[in-house]
Image 1 (cartoon, rainbow, N blue to C red):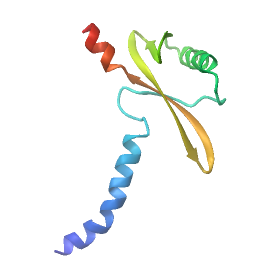
Image 2 (image 1 turned 90 degrees about the horizontal axis):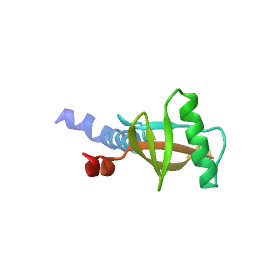
Image 3 (image 1 turned 180 degrees about the horizontal axis):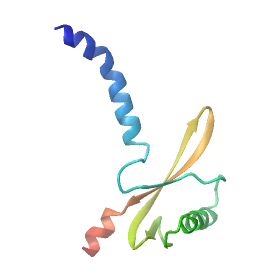
Length: 105
């Protein structure tokens, strides 16, 4: 019973931490980029992503429809806008494209 008195108050914080981490994009297989500029134009945004990946020494190109090929693996673009300290930040997440893998595999 005493154990529950310690666990119950901590449970909301543990759940908050879990979901914040889960949806932050830092999962195995994802590529997370923090670009220096804010991009509203999709064409410029895509070129900036390709440039950043190449600067990191990765072979990358845009396939269209939010799809990239990086080092021979297919990824889908998931741009996220979040607020950090009251300032909006544009985070670029490239997630493995499972749909494309199923079609080709």
